[in-house]
Image 1: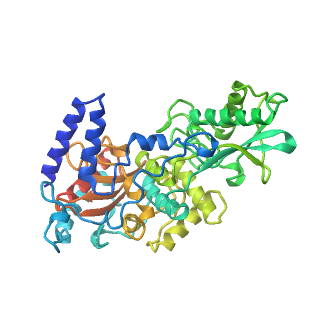
Image 2: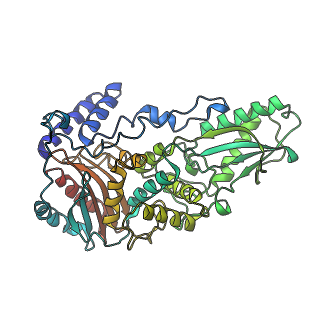
Image 3: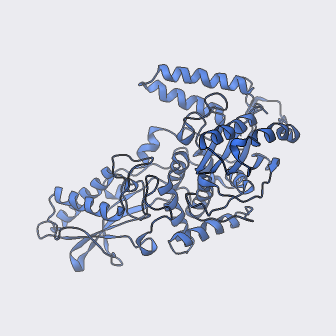
Length: 484
């Protein structure tokens, strides 16, 4: 069955390569991805979602952002086993038919040698669970806590969705400080704010000032970063290509090039850079600005709102965080979770808030230590039992608000951090969050079996001698699950 699925995927790959540069390429990828990965995708990876990620509040002169594409998956849809490839879907099967669970003994015979690969070091821990029943099918030290690297983002995703709800948006806006004749740009924690959207925000602010007759006398400009305690902080690993200083006000996550995703050179002062760009745009739109630069200020309570920009819904932000392994967005969502839970918006408050959310959901937290939102902090500790528990909880029909924690998982061979992996087996059948630090490699996600069941798995390896070999070993183990 795995061979048959892999041949199908390779055939679609060839078709996609032939259609490069045409609309057919995107449609082919989308079709095979949905067909082979499960019933919960609902076409969310489209150009529509990309545009939604930069949409603004309709009250500020732009069309309102659309809700998350497709909305939550229908209750039970995630849990319904798929039919084997080439057979009728479950709805056409005789009533009462239920595919048998994979044989745990057979899984153990096949997985143990794969997970004993020397490329995975000496500290492998693993768990495999049936997503429909929650039954554990394979366990190798499932309660052993170790550094999870970026699989931490699964915990961040579930906690943020639970705390904020999938429709919540992050608000960057401008207010009028009448007493000081000053406009203040207020950061809301949206790391996905682009340079183009900041320029549009400045244009609408200038228009509001002209309507008030304030454009000729001159105005001051300030920026407010009080949403986060201390205005933000640096991650313990410092500023590098993978993460900027954590701030509620930033453009393109502090990138110094024109990119909006992935590693890039970062500024050490994202809020100051954003405020400076905003000030320059005001001048371009005919506003006389007093002073050479914007100053850090606190917006007065009840100040009049002049313009604003709202992010895409949290459901879309979570998907982007997981697909791209976006560290800046992960830290922002963890801090937003802290605010929603009444904790201080700093690293310690975020860690407490995420931990509390997971505890309240009844997840196994013994030995777990949430250190940050992204997994870059090596002091964090997760277990395979928690990771599979997160996936099962996200699939629970009683928690449709958590579904983006599944739909955002990269698709093997097609999207995000798995786009360049699974060239031979498992392409399109595995969806998983990757995790990579020096000496640490992890993989946690879902796989569709030959009988159409969806399994959740988590593999954590420490002491790995090389990232590439470790990734290949983990990929082989995940792909083997599809053969059951």
